[in-house]
Length: 168
Ligand code: FES
Ligand code: FES
Image 1 (tube, protein in one colour):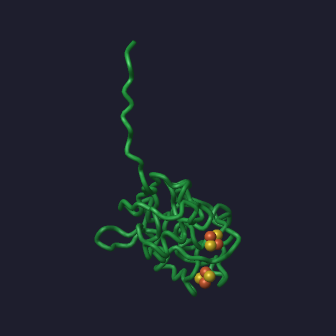
Image 2 (cartoon, helix red, strand yellow):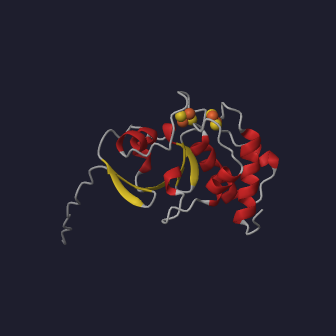
Image 3 (cartoon, helix red, strand yellow):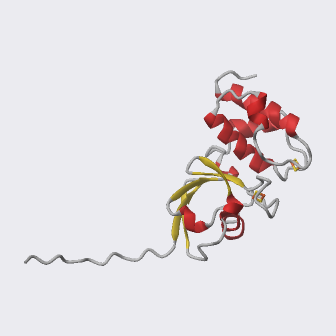
């Protein structure tokens, strides 16, 4: 009878992720929320802590192209995930992403705390719906305690125009 040889595979210690195109390995607590991995370990502080009940969206990032609240995702769920934070939107030469540029052009930022999350939510919306209506924009469930919603709405319409090659 032929015997099968079992070759032991090396045990992978840690959780590999790609963040803004760079590889990282998390070797700490697998239950650590992505928010704290980004902020405390990688010092990517664009992702904000805005609530303790996963409701505000200030920590929004893209995980495998989908909008997620980083405070609600433990590192254990992110094996080989591709993550984009607001720091990863600008081009390699530092040029702003069209959504960021629209934010500047429409002066959408008041205190600014919620805005990285708002921008990530807008990037997600425009990827799914290139020409969103007001109702689509208003369905973004990110909280702005300063009430910059009308400015955000204008910025998203502007970004949609730019991304469709119809600069305003
Ligand atoms: S900090 Fe994540 S939803 Fe508020
Ligand atoms: S700009 Fe201040 S919380 Fe949104």
